[in-house]
Image (cartoon, rainbow, N blue to C red):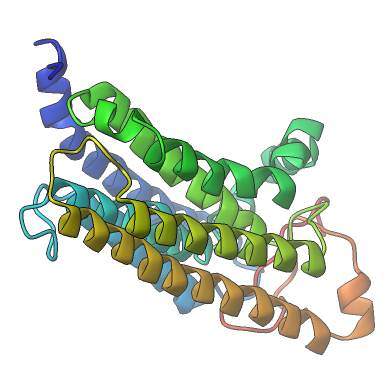
Length: 291
């Protein structure tokens, strides 16, 4: 079996520590943004902060060398890490509304520039459900139904790139489907609901196919361990999709409860504390101009 070059071994061994350091920096940055946030805004929800921190913890756990439930199986370890890193962690981080927090912490001019970036055509394209869903689920078919997974077992750089992709693709999908930031040009509730439903169906089909056909192959592990990994993927995906659906319907319900003039108001960067900031424990907004 192909072995990784010697120069890759230190990189692979240090990768979790580097990722944990990034998580610590993200935690500190979130706290600093809370301190810098304008005082004339409505109070920041403790639920958002708790959700963001929980998301970071989930991601940190996903990077542990030994995960509970792995039972010494590399494929089960991978699947548990995948569920935590690409599904559970991103959802919790998204519900922490980091985009809104950053905009509200930046000076007005910098905030306007960031909102302008969010309105740019490339960002608008990549945040369409029709793009985010295939990036998230489609690569899973490529990884688990081809020799790619077996190739990544002894290729630390390839494995690391796949983990990065799964995190960012999972974060993008969660942000597109259930973000509470009310970004400019956000897709309709129906479009996001359809994308979530199709993604859930594709994810369940892939897990069942993996269980029935013994994919991924070439892992050198017994069939029962591969099937156990497929079950982890199936049930973990169910939980993640239910959480996304709950967040999506919660946002829809909060919008329905908002007064008509509030729902129709165009996005802006800041809102004084005397005005509503939306309903719901995670509700938050991005706006394109200063109040």
